[in-house]
Length: 360
Image 1 (cartoon, rainbow, N blue to C red):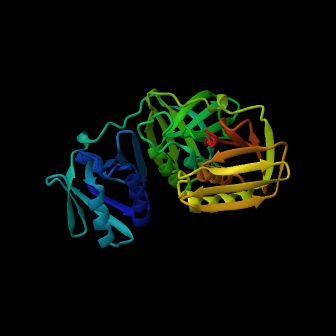
Image 2: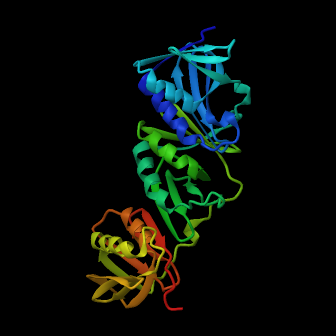
């Protein structure tokens, strides 16, 4: 049996970088700090798991066998051994892994979390660059609270007509974006937050992303890598049902100027925009953006075209991020009242930002 592994340094580094995004540094189980190497004489798979998410990369290799090795230790050795082609030899009698003159202890692959996914069927496929751009736009809107399982990630709604709607929300704002994809199925899928950055990075290096689904998992084929995401028990909310309609007024404003005003307001209200509401005093002939915190005020006047007048408060950071995912010079705010969400729509992208009560 061939116990020697030879891999291009750059390709190996790329695979280990993907594994690093999955491994949780404070994992209690030592096996969850490891990468798994398993070969059948034709292919070699290098993978890592945090139970909820698994990633693996596949290479041509004559290696036969399997072992797990601590990722941090392996990466430390690879910084020392700088050969363009990395040679590693598994010594089962140790058991240990030899990399040049350096040796690392290994663990039995039987301890590694199960990664078999039977019965996976293709759900859809789409252009990788398009997926990267959409994931990046949705990411700021998803909940960062891991205990809010159903919104700590990005929801995918398949309509069976070669379109997929990506959506994210944290309860204070939301985004929906409909993109073209090869799909004839009606499905609701979910990508956990821990997999979003991983998918974004992997998809940059390929042309097409294939998405598959089994009873318990959602799988993404990205180049020579496979990302397996465990499904959560709760369902992602149907964002289409919470989009406000029948606005009381509309307000058209220059996007760049409004983003500049939001950044100025954040200098007073803090980087999270949570110390004091940023007030938009909207009138038919103009808008005043203002905020005051601890005796320091910010005020900027903007030109706009509004159908009526209203005074409404927002988290400046949330408004800035909603504007940042758009691209046109002018945006249209659709406002129903000062307690329901304000909608901003551009082509296939819809964002909604909830206001902050200022007249209590």
